[in-house]
Image 1 (spheres, helix red, strand yellow):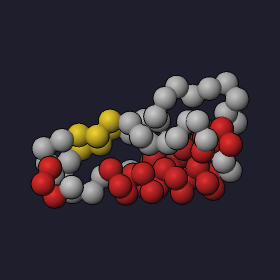
Image 2: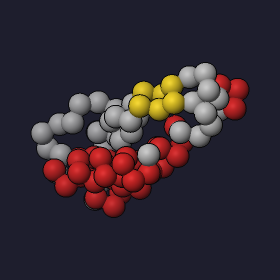
Image 3: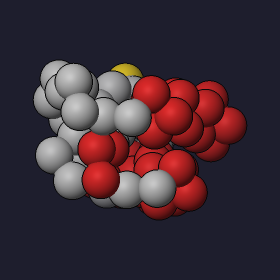
Image 4: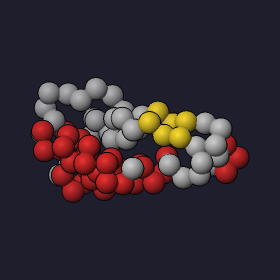
Length: 75
């Protein structure tokens, strides 16, 4: 990461929409987002938060809210 600090921007990967977002609890979603933000935002490079793919219809609204709140809280 240090080799590329300040030189690249990560886009996406904020939350796994295949397993974590539809199947996890609100707490699991929150911890997953926190972990990903810590991984992608280290150093001076940028990061654009968004999920990996489209949010499918089977995702509980509470999990979408948890994802966005965690991005706000930890980002």
